[in-house]
Length: 274
DNA sequence: CTTGTACCCTGACCGC
DNA sequence: TGCGGTCAGGGTACAA
Image (cartoon, rainbow, N blue to C red):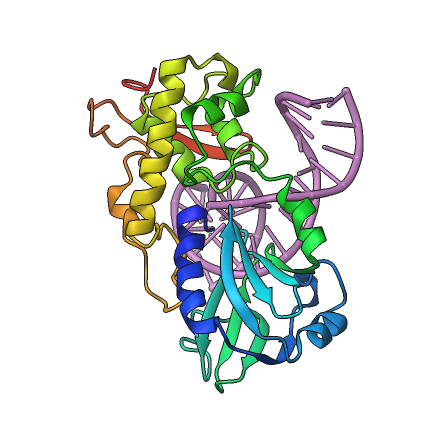
């Protein structure tokens, strides 16, 4: 479910709770969420490790451990975390896949209904090679309009599809792609490489603006995303097109349209997104 | 290299 | 109440 703003919200929650904590014991109840080794060796290698920091790259969460390894988490569609002495809300956590018992007598719970998400325990070099395949961080100062233009150059795929490609740009997903394109007044079906300088400039601003605003509002709760403390985001109130098929565009009144691109819904305004 | 499709998995919802 | 189809903040493997 989560895109960059939701993952960042979760990261902040986890960082304040987990930094400095030691993992005493790990229990995996759904084996397929450990992606690159057996649950046994995963648990064994985590035992006694201290969590030094919690970081984010694109939609990945990264827990840096005191043995220089990195616990990489991908929430995909339905991954969630909660922390407590026991599961805070059992009706919301009915598919717990992993438990990490901490040295403050609390447990970090990972729940994932669809089990599309998961964990990888990586050495620094392994993570570096994964990281190298990701596009730039959209909120980093190094991410300029020129950089975006470079990433889109020569692509014939629709701009919406290009924005979802994590190798081009890391962190934007289905909601924020539609929202950024509406704010930039760009038709999501236009070939990415055909945007002119001014389009790319508008899009660059729109992407950063929408991601920043969403982080400031603790993300978007459209269906079931929740922060670590169980609270909903607030950015759903600021959505202009996502999930609003047939509703009038707030800018020009034309009914919002829905099309399917790369197998997923795109929402846009046929009136003011040229 | 690029692009499209199938697939992973479960649950909620809608129309009949 | 049941049944089938569709859809869901994601990403990968593989084919063309």
